[in-house]
Length: 537
Image 1 (cartoon, helix red, strand yellow):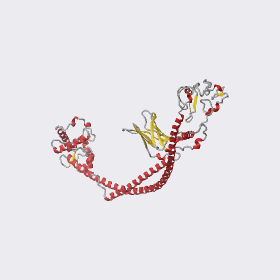
Image 2: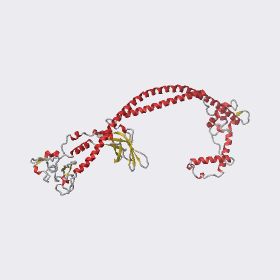
Image 3: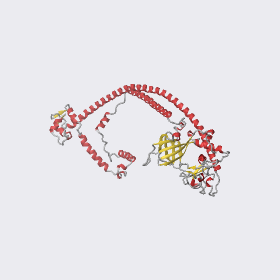
Image 4: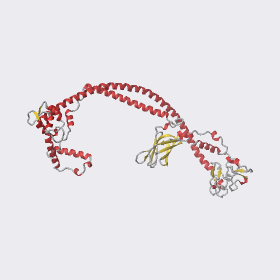
């Protein structure tokens, strides 16, 4: 309810029981223009276009272009007729409605010559309007009282936030000092941990190197035995030529000269000299045992796997169409069948790369010794303490930022809108649930399932200059299909409650919400203020 409405209510209430004094003036002329219509003096058109004798005023002929000479007739198409409407609200109607048989003025003055059976309803309309305005005035008064409470609460809340902010800042300094102290403790504990880990890793690398060396020597001895066909303890050019994969240039022709080159330019080498030869051929050498055994195993496996019929129908489907769970079940069944009937169906042995096999032979790194483990535990404890303190500091930083935001936020001239912060209000319609979180966002969600749509995030106060806090603007919501981003304007109305009463979409992707709040209520004008300047009753 605006101050103008309240003022008008007081005027209406005061008019009850007061006898109106009828000021003589031509029909259809408002009291505010009485001075321009002086009987017996020439009349000048209100637009100043011409002057005519006064007896031509309301003579049912239009002399003035602005229609001001015929305020009480329908002669001028652009004229207007003033309804006095004593006991109710005065008003104007187009002159074309004068004596048209329809009662437009509640005091029936517009149908003075039409014969229409009109009844004066002004007092009844005035009574109903006074009752309505009186209720609105009561709501405004109660809402304004609530607003005063909200202002006081906002003041107390602001002081509490400032006090909390000061306390947090003090605690933050202490926490920052603690974080730095724990950082030093952590770094101090991590240095011996790092050194101990490096020593352990170095020892393990040395151990692995010894293991690899022993494996390499064993492999070399094995290869020497394979190449030494005549078992004389040495490898000759002829024996080396039996392994064509050792051809240095891999041109398909392994010559004696190339074999002799691998042997260091001699015809044969003993077990001692073979060590240098081994370094040249170990990357290419293929074991005779592998060459003879692997093809036979693969061939046998293929025949045996193909021979028996399948126990399920999975073969008629492409592999990629078989669900993973079914494949796992099939694998488990196959493994059980293999164990029960190993002679009937064999699967090829799993292939293993040399590097993987070597890693398995070397084993995994042994656990840390007790001294190293103690250092690791101490460093981890220091890290945990530091991480916890650093996390606490981040939380404090967030609290400080949130408090600074609330303290500096524009919640109205007296922070009367602060109580809306961190609150949300909903309106449920037949299709949607609208959710307004003041100073945050506005959203819409289908009532019977579906994703939420952002109708805008808090933008700014957008009311007129003289009442800027009467409208809220929420912008940059979810984009419409081939249209703009959604936005919402919140129209605030005075009331005792805080509630959303309606949502509409006057333009595509632009929403309008009506929101009642006592924070927007203005102080009702006093009785003297309502009477000041009022002369026409």
